[in-house]
Amino acid sequence: MAEPASLKVSVWRGGEQGDFARYEVPARANQTVLDVVTHIQRELDPSLAYRFACRVGMCGSCAMTVNGRARWTCRTHVRKVVGADGELELRPLANLPVIRDLAADLAPFFDKWQRAQGRFQPKDAPDGAVPEDFVVVPPASKARREADAGIECIGCAVCYASCDVVAWNPDYLGPAALNRAWTLVNDVRDGAHGDRLDAVAGDAGCHSCHSTQSCTERCPKNLDPSSAIAGLKRRLFWDTLLGRR
Amino acid sequence: MSTRGQTHLWVVQRVTAMILAVAVLVHLVTIIGAVRGGLSAAEILGRTRGNGAWFAFYAVFALSAGLHGAIGLRNMAAETIGLRGRGADIAWLAIGLVTAGFGIRAAYGLFA
Amino acid sequence: MDLRPRAHPTYLAFVVHRVSGLLLALFLPLHFWALGSAISGEARLDGFLRWTENPLVKAAETGLVVLLAAHLAGGLRVMALEFLGWRKRQKDMVAISAGLALLVGLLFLLNVV
Image (tube, rainbow over all chains, first blue to last red; front, side):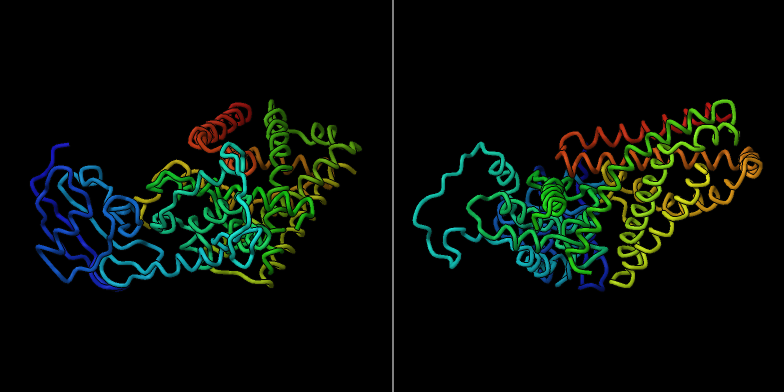
């Protein structure tokens, strides 16, 4: 696509209530959306609030809504998302409280990881002590492959912001927390499977997922939270039917 | 309703879905076959009257459809108009069973 | 509603599944009640069937058959994901679902008209 000389950037300003401000930003080769935001804040309007840290797709802090879709802005090239006349529309992530401008409050998102028992609990040492010996986990075993499939989550909340069930049911744990729970349910070293499956069952948990797969569609790390949630459903189905819980 | 109860509703939804997957297929094939050359009461009743297998099929079909539909409506009502809670769940279950009852009545009419 | 974040095949499959499910769930009590009332004798049933000869009713029936087939096919997609863990072929399944629903509708229409 021919690149326009400048970008017409609409940026959300304010909190829950607010409006778009418009900025003209010079277009450059290999420019990322985060570069555009940084240009606005450094050159045009220092009062703009946004969040970033690593700039290389590791930390998960720079996600925003870019032209309607949640994306990690540091690894999103402008030319991939820009409109024909150089328009960019930037909003904070959806489904989360807005702190100010482009910064969303991720506290509810991480609270739900806690509620989904997203922490590893060693089987041998429930009090958190170091186990006496190593556990042998064959990397090719089925459970380990299931766990590995979801382990690279960077906690950017793109999936959470893309999920309609989160919007419809504020108690819903969301794709990232459920994906984390599924990796732990498949971790043979973990000793809290029963509690965790209780925590992710029901209307606030995996059973509300309707497999729209927006999470899988949008995950910048190409993870598949939708399948992780399906895995939790499958485990709970057989456990319930066979009276194992 | 407890998360345990919610899980059970979901399990019922999926078990009925599996039954319905087969039953709907049979239903669709029967419909498409039956409408060939027009429907007549004699033809339908000739197939079903006194036939215990058809009655059992339609009774199970109606029960599954009634429950499956009501649980689906429950989820939609919770998500779109925020209708949640124990009272609502009991009401939906009752609606499902009454609907199924109507279906079984119709199936019995075909049988007797 | 902003359609931009929702424009992908599996979201569309969800919408079709939900709308068809809603309409079928509303139709179901009506269907059962009408049949239960009509099946009180051959004459009454024939009277009811003659009513269904009405082109408007036929069109509605075709719509219902398509809804049923679409809901069936969409349900198979969901269960393939949930119970068989089919991941990669989800988009193909959406297309197959749509095709199946249209095929069944067409078959019904060809037979009924």
